[in-house]
Amino acid sequence: MKVSSGIPVITLDGPSGSGKGTIAQLTAQALGWNILDSGALYRLTALSAERQGVDLADENAVAKVAETLDVRFEARTPGQPVSVILMGDDVTLEIRTETCGAMASRVAAYPLVRAALLQRQRDFQSAPGLVADGRDMGTVVFPDAPCKIFMTASAEVRARRRYDQLKQQGESVKISHLLNEIKERDERDMNRSNAPLRPADDAVVLDTSDFSVDEVLEKVLQIWSSRQS
Ligand SMILES: Nc1ncnc2c1ncn2[C@@H]1O[C@H](COP(=O)(O)OP(=O)(O)OP(=O)(O)O)[C@@H](O)[C@H]1O
Ligand SMILES: Nc1ccn([C@H]2C[C@H](O)[C@@H](COP(=O)(O)O)O2)c(=O)n1
Image (cartoon, protein in one colour):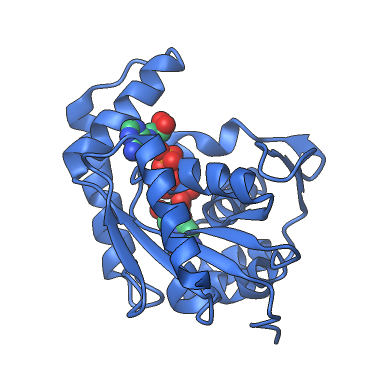
């Protein structure tokens, strides 16, 4: 099984809403690297299982879905937003809903599902480099990555960010509801027995609560630069 190939990887792990996806995108763009949105694979597994009428409580059946996931990530330029195509159907927006995120968190707790998606994630490691965003990028998927960052922010700040994001998209939700969902998701992601959400021992922990996107990006690029000198 391929783990390390000498191609550099920056891992960005952290809880929901900490800004990993946004920063992964901008970092990949700044460096001209490839990107792995590992959460999308769990979201796609959940969505595909639901579409096929698979019971999400059946670990073996959901793992089969993960093993045979027919998905394409279409990126025109490295670092630019990608379209996500599931069995020929563009599901880029559908996988981003809160409902799909909650289903993803549920199937992500299954060891068989995690095992089924492991090599698929490692296969994203290609030249000139990879920015990998998720929950276990630094601990399990790319344990040899030269630069590991664990992004955090208070649950309140993350709920506010999500609220602003959904409002911008024209969705009306209560911030108290989002806060509860975030706390529930954190609880499930941190307390599962397999690959729980936690910083790798050699990760830099970055609390983004009081920083803008631009400030976080600058810090991530500084951390990467410091790893090279
Ligand atoms: N430092 C920041 N300051 C303000 N807003 C931010 C910051 N970082 C991210 N955001 C905003 O917060 C929202 C959530 O960010 P993002 O989707 O990147 O988080 P995430 O950690 O990838 O979440 P998930 O794991 O649920 O996909 C987005 O609208 C993004 O623009
Ligand atoms: N490496 C990963 C990535 C994601 N998950 C789980 C945890 C989340 O609740 C869910 C959706 O992730 P998101 O798109 O919000 O980053 O998938 C995981 O367990 N491991």
